[in-house]
Every structure is written in structure tokens, then in C-alpha cells.
Image 1 (cartoon, rainbow, N blue to C red):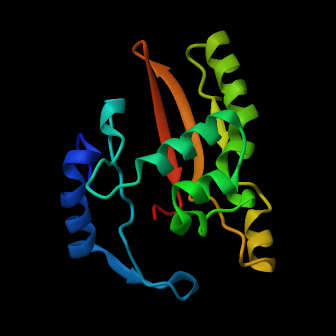
Image 2 (image 1 turned 90 degrees about the horizontal axis):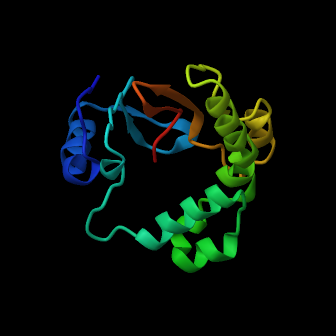
Length: 165
């Protein structure tokens, strides 16, 4: 397990080296990858949560965030930002349509009860696995849940992921 205050832009090369050195080789759906279980990253400063490395497509990142916050999925706009990445994305796994209404509910919950533990967004759906088994071209979201808490006057977010690719 890796657990320390992280700055993704600064520390990404070390994180990558950690995975390369200690990751276990697995082949889900025939795709070779290295896996670390559990991998816990603590990111306490929002400015440190973005990987900003040479060659990174910031237009794609901003387009994904914009669509998530708007609650939409526009494949053509994503393709214009990055044709390669757009091939990996589809409307079924898009976060915006899945999470938009839930995020509004989280806002209401935490506005009403600052100590609530119920402010959870479920990105994954109960029928996702069955659907992708029948239609392999669909994508399962990598993120399963976002759990929001207000503690010590600050908003905390705990993200659970099944994959980070």
C-alpha cells in the first residue's frame, strides 16, 4: 500500500515507477496490466489532484470535466479533443449522465446536514456488469463511488475505483 500526501503532477513519475516495480501482472479480458491492491492515494489539495505532465492532453481533461458537470456526453466533442481517447469512451460509461442528478442530491444533503455520511454518488450501476458481458463494446466506469463528507469545515471526497487506466 502507498499512503502519503501526493501531488500528482510532481509525483506521477515516482508513482508510475512504484507500480512498475511492485505491480502484479494480471490480464483482465486478455489485456496485460500491472495491479497494486490496495492503492490508497491521499490528495489534500485540489490543485495537486491533476496530472500535468508533458504531452498530456489538457483539452480532453477539461472536456471530460465540463461534460461531467453538465450531466451530458458528447462523443463528437471528445473525439475533437482526442480521437484515441474517444475510442475508449461511450455513452454507457459516461459519468455526466450517471452522476449529475446525484451530485445535486449530495449538495442538498450536505447543505441540510453538514455531518451527513449519506452524501454518496454511485457511478457504477447494478446492471453494468451484465450489460458489458452482453455488449463487450460498452465500457464499465472505472469509478464506483464518490463519498462526500464535510469534516473540520472542509469538504472531503473519497473515491473508490475498480480500475485506474
